[in-house]
Amino acid sequence: MAAATTITTTTDKPAPSTPRRVCFSFAAYAKNVIDHLKKCKIPISDGLSEEEFSSIESSFRFTFPPDLRSILREGLPVGPGFPNWRSSSPQQLEILMKLPIMGIDKEITRNNFWCPFWGDEPLNPKEALTMAKRFMKKAPLLVPIYRQYYIPSLPNLAGNPVFFVQGVNFHYSGCDVAGFFQNVEFRRKSNIPRPSDLSESSTMEAPAWAAKAARRIEFWSDLVESGGGGGGGGGSRRKREASKLNHFLEEMSRTLMRGGWREEEVKEMMMTTNNSMDGQDDEEKHRLVLTDTGSLAKHLRLMSLTLLRAGWTIDDVAYSLGVHPHQHEALDD
Image 1 (tube, rainbow, N blue to C red):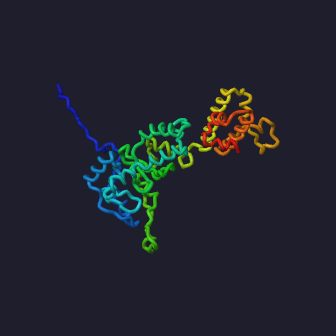
Image 2: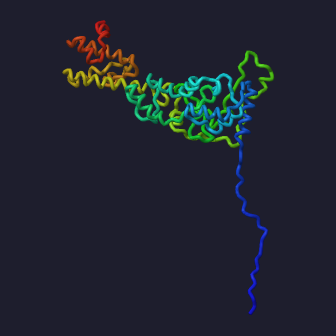
């Protein structure tokens, strides 16, 4: 009986190739950034040590994003507009990091800003600020890079976008740190620049790995996407004023009806003639149009005169219209 023979054959076929991974070094890019800033005549001191990073991060309770950390490890810009993480006082650095939120708080209390992503704006500025602060608690701390340019500390990943934040003006200034240094110009501050200074480029090339789209950051991306550019930050200040005026008039109407006036009489008092609407019917000409506090004051004066002629006392009028006692003299004019 013949023995079975097993024959093993081999082929020279190459193993399936795997996609080549692109590697990049933040350290190499950080050196390019520092060299660029030096060419722009920005003073550069020694980079932060690991001990200094740990001290700053524990003091202010945040962590530097990896890409910004690499740059500050390579060299520390200390020129005007740059945060001096080594020599500035803790108070100065804390104010720098609180400025974005402080600016928003200030404009909300002035009734100059509201983000539509937060819902309907409360009529009372204090209530609006309380509501806004609930959203601000979710906002990652912004780490200052240069002047009004900040990068979020969270997520603690490379590639976070850089935000320009000044008061209630918000926009992206780079999809990441690389985009920021490509977009922002660092000009030499001197009386008469030398020809050699003029020949230096004020911007630098972004690396191939630079982000092409901004990563979404909680709270801050909402402000940018709401069209925040001051004067209302995505909401019309005039519309908000008109809404508050209408609310005030509704309250006043209810007060007058409680005072004994019929609904038809109150409705008539709430109307004001618009003489600029010649050619329109009576209903159109008598529609109440209030767009600001000036038009409200004029209308309240007309209403107060109507009530006084009807026999109301100044105190009754002041109570119904919400006029303070020291303003009574205006009703007598």
